[in-house]
Length: 193
Image (cartoon, rainbow, N blue to C red; front, side, top):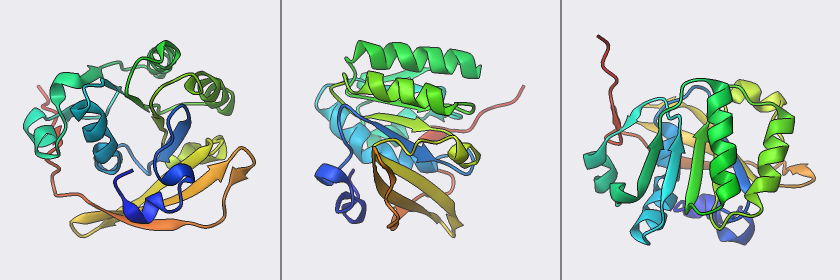
């Protein structure tokens, strides 16, 4: 995962390949990308493509390069409706050819997550879903990991994470500091008008 405190609690010592991980966010922001930037950098430096489906902000190429992410291997899929985001996610996960798939899904039901779990088992790389934390009652806390992000603390944010298995969420939670500069250099601010 690129976060040693988190790695010690994840099965296999890092983000699992061929599995689905949910990153529950209080609101769509930069935190989830900062948490996942080490795995994105690893995959893109190895020449594997990483798909970003429906991120709330536009990726900022100079900021990505700063974090070691090779933007030439980043595929940004700009889809607006929850239905289209889910469809695009299913197609990319089904293809199984990406180094990682990260999807921001504002509305996702437990049965849709379970379908994505089955599809993810055929993937070479990890699959991450970023539903809002309010969806956690529908969350399956997908095996083998579910991660939640907490409120900002000064110029940083704390991510609280826990490993999960098919039986559900492991009760032990881990706090990982994820530095988020304000504003993050990974995203461009959206312009209105």
